[in-house]
Length: 91
Image 1 (cartoon, rainbow, N blue to C red):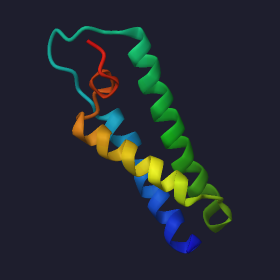
Image 2 (cartoon, rainbow, N blue to C red):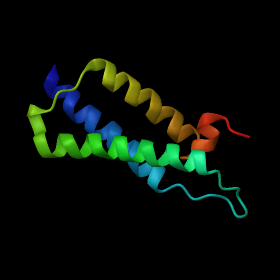
Image 3 (cartoon, helix red, strand yellow):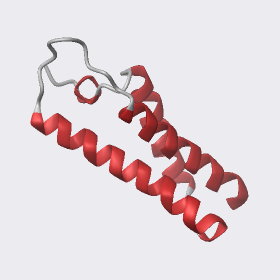
């Protein structure tokens, strides 16, 4: 079971990180520092998880719950097109 979880968690983490890094705001979009810090935290945590799995490989510890949370976050991130303010519903 762990042989399936590790690549799935890696791909989900990497996809979240890449989508957030490639977000391009519309012209004249307002900058909100709190949302920017939240986006930075999401990028660092998802990218760090992917890097940890890349470095430690099969010795990485992952769980089904972690995969579930990452998949939900992946879906909402892609639906919001990487816009964390829209993800958090900040007006």
